[in-house]
Image (cartoon, rainbow, N blue to C red; front, side, top):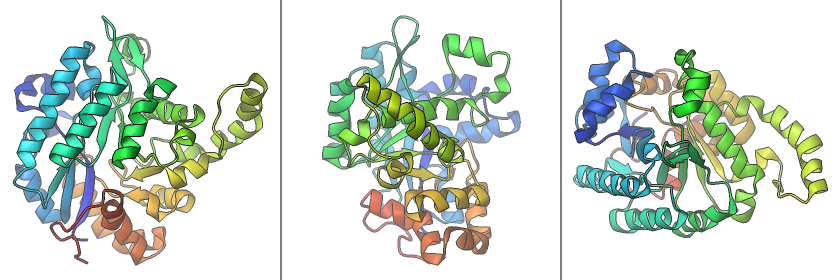
Length: 351
């Protein structure tokens, strides 16, 4: 399929290449590191060539994980996020028909995060924000800032006012959490377990703490076909309804007003980033609908040719799995065109 939109594609500032190499040892195989380093510090390099070759018409870039969320000091974090946003805006400015970006944000303070998001959307035309799970703060970074509490309502109101999505992306385990749970289980870092554990806790916290009830027009994106949540749709909802909701009501606590799947059908989108499984895609579509799923690769962690090869080479099988040719094209391109209000871009109307 030509004209696919891919929206979980990472970059990092070239000046931080050494730091990038060090962190890559967590989840980049030795034979893939040279390609990874080239791609993550050069978003307009061979990735554009690969996009042309494999039918990606439009790429939305975001800073690699943990990005600003790994900066404990607020001033340093805000300066880094601003530098990242100015850098990628300059990198893609000559490729407006091929590339967009998500804002990187310091999440130490909801008002400042709102202001930087607004700056990026209004000045550069960025398409939303991507944040790498919780913000680390405090002297040693062991203070975890979640965004599911009422003090973050000013930020969510900004997302709604600007009508842009918020991508909740994983980050690597850190500090005592890493030492106590993953130091002796380092091969579970990333897609096997750690990424999904963090993001699913955060997203479900947003649901149960009423963020989507207070902001019914809020749009949130989850990668990797839902960070393991879809496989537990029935069990989570069952527990919410027969235990959590009655407990919350008896205590006078805030709790989600709707059933779990309603939020996934009205507020949440899933991407195929790094999860190129047709049966899993079918399962998600069967539960949330084809209009809630977006194609993505997750480069340079994943290979563009592999992600696109799965979607293109298995077109007949995927079309049958998702409910027809329209759904196939919607997932590959048209859902993203609507969500991000994209105009014409390279191959935007191709078959």
